[in-house]
Length: 119
Image (tube, rainbow, N blue to C red; front, side, top):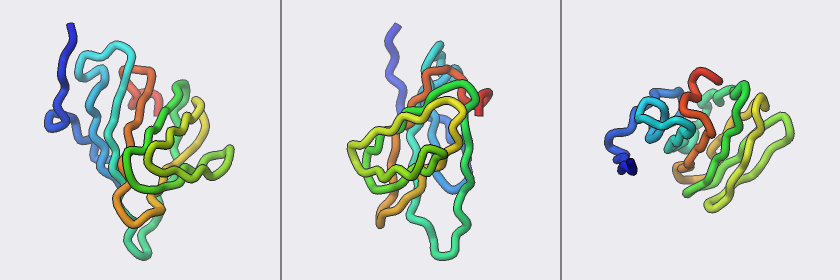
């Protein structure tokens, strides 16, 4: 049965250095998809950057809704702007940083219902 999931009902993951709302996942009844809305603020002067992470056996697909950023990964640094999409293979360490003057807003898709078990 089709369902509408409201952003106001999304689970705040409380991840460091960003706002991350899990809109769709196994927790909302999905069998094969996780969708997160992520907002990365403009870094404060002297702020320590977040480290890289990876997902052991799943891809991550990131769509840039607004702002400018860079995804740093083992395969290089990838500049991103609104409308861009980056596909990160399983197991590749990566981090996305805000390089602009406004918040970087992303939609992050994973082809699994539970990402936390794979990060």
